[in-house]
Structures are given as C-alpha cells and as structure tokens.
Amino acid sequence: MNRLSVRLRVTLAATVIVATVLTAASLVLILTMRDSLQGGVADEAARKVRASAAALKEDPLLDAAPPGKDGSAEPTPPKSGHGTGTGGEKVVMADGYATASKVVDTIDGPVTVKARVSLAPVRNALDMLEQLLLVGVPALVVLMAVMTWQLMGRVLTPVELIRATFADITAKNLHRRVPEPVTRDEVARLARTMNVTLGQLESAVDRHKQFVADAAHELRNPVATLSARLELGMTQAPALVAEALTDVARIKELTGDLLLLARLDGGEPLIGTDVDLAQVAAEATARPAPVKIVLELESDVIVTGSRSHLERMVANLVANAVRHAASKVTVRVTADGLDVIDDGPGIPVAARERVFQRFHRLDEARARDAGGSGLGLAIARDIATAHGGTLTVQDTLHGAHLAFRITTPGGPNTPADRPRAE
Image (cartoon, rainbow, N blue to C red):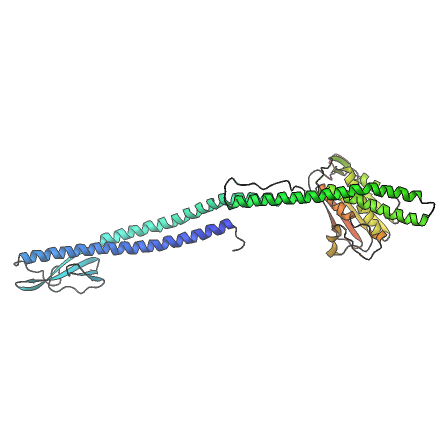
C-alpha cells in the first residue's frame, strides 16, 4: 500500500467509504420502505374490518361469513407475521395478503369479521426499489471514484510540478524556483517556503564560491612574488631555494586548481567549439615522462566544448596515470571517447567513486611529491560533467582504467563522411 500514489490511495479510500455508506443506506431504505408499505396495507385491512364491524352492529340481521372464508367465525391460523390494529383488530401477514380480523358482539352472539388486502403492490414497489438501487449504487460509487480521481489530480498537479522542478535544481542552477500556485492553501505555502529556502541556499553557495575565487585570486600575486625572490637567492643557497621553489610551485598549482573548481562550481559557460580529442591527447602526452606512453588515436573524434578545459582534463588523467604506472600508460581515443590505462596497482572497487572526491588520495601514506594535491581527478570529472559526459573507473585485469564518455548529443563523434584511421 505504501507504493501506491497519494492520488490512488485517496481515491480508493473515498470509494470504499462511499460504497459502504451507500450500501448501508440502501439496506436501511429497503427495510424502512418494507415496514412502511406493509404497515399501510395492514392499516387498510384493519380499516375495512372496522367498517364491516360497524355495519354489522348497525344491521344485526347481517350474518358472518362461513368458517374458513373472509368474515368467518373461525379464522385461519396465521402462517407468518401478525399484529394488532388501533381498534383491537388482529392483523396477520401470510400467503401474500394482510388479513385483519375482529370479534363483534351481535344479538346472535360473537361473530368474527375478517378482511384482507393483497401485498402484491408492496412487493412490486420493493422489487422496483431494489432494482434501482442495484443499478444506482454502483453507478454512484463509480461516479464518486472518477470525480475523486479527477479532483485529486487537480489538487496534486501543483505538487507534481513543484517536485519535478525541484528535482532539476542542482548546485549549478540554484537560481531556479519552484512554481507557486495562485491559491492560498498548504501547497502554495509549501512552494513559498521552498523558494525562500532555495534563495537562502543560493546566497550561501554564491558566497562560498566567491570566497574560494577571491582567495585563489589573491594568492596568486604573493605566490608569484615569493617565487621571484627565491629565484634571486638561488646563487646563495641553491639546495634550500630549490626545495622552496618546489613548494611554491605546488602552492601555485593548488591555487590554480581551486580557482578552476570555483569557476566550474559557478556554472561558468563553456565556449562551444569543435575540439579534436586525438590532438588534445597527443599534446597532453608530448612532455617527457618517467614511464612509456603508448598512443592509440583515431582521427576525427570531435568533441564540442572548451578546448582549454578538455586539455586540462586529459592532462590530469595522464598525470594521474603516469604517477601510478609501473612501466606503461596507454592513451586511447576512439569514437566512444577517451581511455587512459596504466599498469599500476589499480583502484579497488570500493574506492572507484572516492577517487573523484576533492582532496582524496588512495594511499594517505604516500609521499607528498608522489601523491599530488588530490584535486586532479575531481577537476577531470567536473570538466567531463560540464561537457555532458561521464568519467568513470572501468574494469581491467591490471592497473587502472579511466574512461571519458559523452552521453549527450554533440560529441564526441566520428562523422560518417570522414574516414576513420586504421
């Protein structure tokens, strides 16, 4: 029952209640009508008996009917139902008739006067009522169910619109608001409350993004100044300055990463250009590396998006693979997308999502120089998502396999009229 919608549950509940009430009311109506109609027939029979008794008293020469017939001195024993009239008449319901009898004192002695009225009209009326109720009650129940279903649909339509709109709101479009019904009911108050909450959340997120962007921007100048001063002192303490410059370079890289993340979180619009994914991969692997890099590139694999962002994504994936590879990294570009595979220790299944979290490292005990800042894969996934794609860890026998795939129209694609490289 919990899986049923509110609309269906309310309709079922209303239908059951209405069906129960109408059925009980129909039974009460039938019983009441039967008693009323039979009472009317009994009164009619008693009235006839009183009239006959009065006439008999006024004309003592009238004799009673023979025994066993209407007005006989020996009434037939009743088979079912009996009562007493207002004038002391005995009324019996049997054999389809209401029979009334009364003992009248005459000069010849007591005489029993009887009269009967047919119950056929009563039965016909009850049969007609039952037929009407057998048709009318189900029809009313069905009509009530349809009306309840339609009414609940109208009532819940604003709720469904609010739910659908709210489901589409993410951290990148917090400016959107749920529709507010023009009514002043609970649904309208819920929508207004949600919009107020969304406004407060949007302000908080904007302040956070602005803080990160400002902090990253403000760090650039002092870091650049510190780097320049250290380079001037290289001749006096080369070993110490070299170590300090390494830390400064790390700070500069981290600052750039934070600034890029702030832009991605802020939903910065991408410049839609056609980017050759194979060319980007070739440029990202052009630098010398401590391990062997194997390129398997198909031509004319075009991605629509920001070239600088895609270059950063590929560079991060390659750098991550080089950092963990034992001897070889394979970079493959096909019509499906980009694959970067290394022969390192691999990524455990339980950690395949955690590696894309910010500042997360698989091995917390590794050295700082080998471990990186923990933002490379997080930035790569954000860039992939911004381009309507996915970045996931795939199954492989050895090492780690990261795959970039486009899931929305527009890239990567291999045009049918362009030959694919063999």
